[in-house]
Image (tube, rainbow, N blue to C red; front, side, top):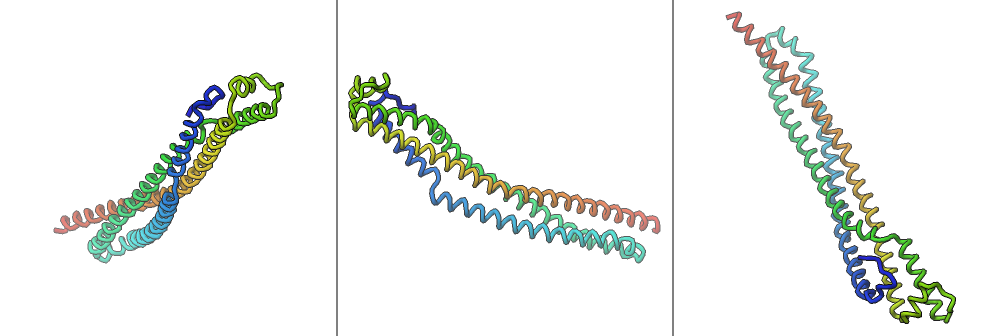
Amino acid sequence: MEPLTPETDDSTAASMSYVLREEEQLAQVWSDADRAEHDRSVREGIERTGGIRQLVGGLRARSDSIWERFVTLTLERLLSEQLREFLDQIDAEILALSQQLVEADCEIDRLRSRVQERRRWLEEKIALLEPMAHRTSTQTHLNMMQARVEGLEAYLLGKKDVAPEAYDLHYKRHTTLPGDLLYIRVRLSTTQVAIAASNRSKQLSELDAELAALLPEADRYKAELTALMTRVECMSELSRYWLAYLDIARDKSD
């Protein structure tokens, strides 16, 4: 909406209609239902993060157990000629653990995707608020209203020592009181919309930060899963090495 000037008083009524539409749009950008949906998403994110925390902790403990048995019992089982059975058991546990690690990694990706989706939703709403919040500065509107009130006051009190702008506005053009009041009302409403949109934009930015705070913990768990997967791959490689060694030893004995 173009800033109103004294020369555009004829459009004041239309401008008031525009302001009313903006007020309605402002109310629609962020409703009680939107806030409830956001709160639900945050709770869901926190709960899923907690579930991932427990899941990763359990997988870490299982990985530690398998690794400890692998590095401490392999030689013992070799000497007791039970290595193949031991490795078969380890491989079965490794396979199950690998599948669970992949599932946990997918769960983290789903959480991150959900958080990013909700953040884009907030960003879209912030983008709708920005034009209303920055259409014009509050100070500019206040200055315009002050000038209009001063000129109107001078006209009503019959003062002749007024600024040329006030003379053109209130004497030369014979501005009516209802028109001036409507003009001031438009300015006040526009300023109010701008302030409300700015405050709402800041609020949504804070809510966006609340969602973003879920990501670092998810990233830490994803990095930990990567380390666990590397350990599992290492055990798999070593197991294949030992099985190959047993096959070679058996062939030589034959």
